[in-house]
Length: 196
Image 1: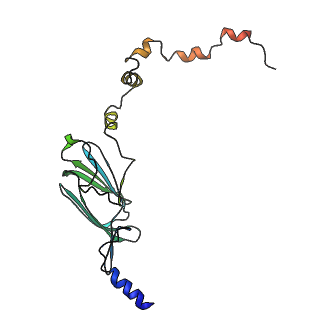
Image 2: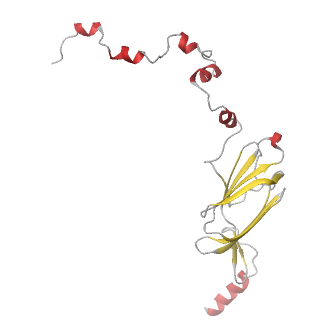
Image 3: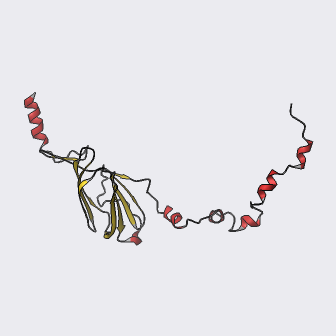
């Protein structure tokens, strides 16, 4: 049994990567790839590295790549990842924040006129550690609504092919004095018989 364990350990040390667990396996230590979330707008990318208690972090953001290396997690194990972006970014205008539970990057896109990227990475193969951040995600169509926060009912009806703006008030729409009229008794109520 001891000999079998020795054989397995000898073979495992030469395996470059266990892709099921996102680990690089070596003789004495295991380097993991941290789980990540991403979302985008037409001018920026949100990237969240979900790793808590990060210590000794090394972050290198260039116009084409992000290299992240740190010890963290509940076991304080080494984590490392290299990401090559789909398109160029502006590292000088980008920011990151370590909240203790994760590291959030706000990365500015270089070509803001190009709009939304089809994916975060240059490689077409989807990595297992990268997921979409639906809390921050906005589609290209949704970004217009973000710019128009004062979008009212009149505007909405006009954009749907309904009433032109201001028409609700002209048609006798709801006005603040209407509340009092609703509380008044109707003259037709007098003719109704009592319920038994």
